[in-house]
View 1 (cartoon, helix red, strand yellow):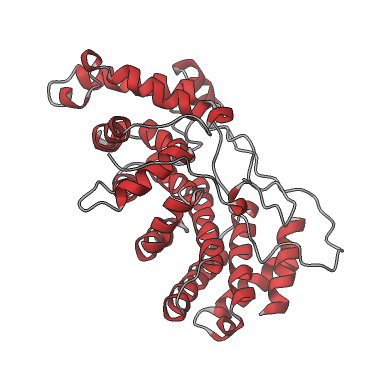
View 2: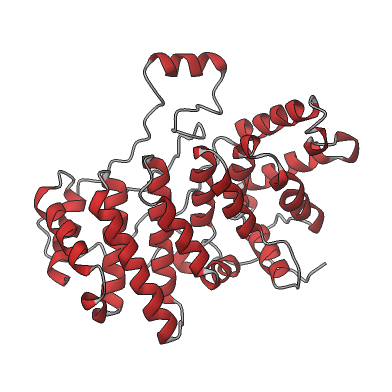
Length: 356
C-alpha cells in the first residue's frame, strides 16, 4: 500500500465557474440523464416514453449571464480557473443503474463474471464509494482504500461498453474526491500500475455516445487536483488526440465536454513550468484545435470556452499570432464578434480579434 495523505486542493481549482469572467456558462446543476443524447438512461420507462413523445431529450440549460458588453476591460481571459462537472444530484440513480446492469449481466452466462458479487461485499463497497462522493462536506476526512480503488479500476471499468456509462459517471465523481485523486495519483507512480485515465479514454472511445461524453467530462475533472493534473498534462499528446477527435462531434454535449477539457488543458499549461520546446509545440496544437472548433461551432457555451482557451494562450505567448491556423481562427472570431447573438461570446470575440 502506498503512503497517503489527504490532498489539499490548489487554490486555482476551487471553482466550477469562470470566476474572472463572472459568467455562469458552466451550469451549477447538471441535469444529466446521463445523456441528453436522447437515451434518457437514468429515466424510468414512462419518463423515456414521455421524452420520446416530446420528440427528444430534455435540453440542458446553458445560457450565459447577460453582462455588460460596453465595459472596456477584458474580463474573459487570460483564464486562471478551471471548469468541472461536479453535480452529485444523481448518485442514487447511478447506484440503481449499476445494480440493474449487474443483474442483467448475471442473468447471461456469457457476462456473468462481470456482475457484482454480493457474497464478497462488492455491492456494499460500491455503495460506500458513492456515499463518500455524495458527502462533499466530509471530503477532508473520508478516504478510499487500495481495495476500493482496485475494485473500481479493474472490476467495474472492465464492464462491456454498452453497460459502462454509469461506471464512467461514477469515475467523473471519484476523481473530484481529494483522497481518491491523491491515492490513484500515488499508485500511478508505481511501475506497472493500472492507468485509469488510459482506461477511461479507451473505454469511452470504444462505446456509444453517452460513454464519449462521460469520458470527456471525467477528463475535465481530472484537472481538479494537483496529483492527477500533473498526470494528465504529462500525457498531453493522448489527451489532445482525444479532444481533437470529439471537439467537432455531431452531438453538442460531447463538443461542450471536449472544449472544456481543452480549456482546462490551456489553463494548466499556461500555469505549469513547461520547458519552452514542449510549450511551443503543445500550445500551437491547442490553438489549431480551437481554431477548427470555432469554425464550425454553433453553441454559445462551447464558443465562449473555445474563445477563452485561444485568448489565454495568446496572452501567454504573443508569438502564437503568427502560428499555423491563426488566419482561420481570425476569420471565425471576426464572424462571432460581428454576428453572435450571445453578449459574452460577442464581447470575448471582439477582444480576441483585437489581439489577433
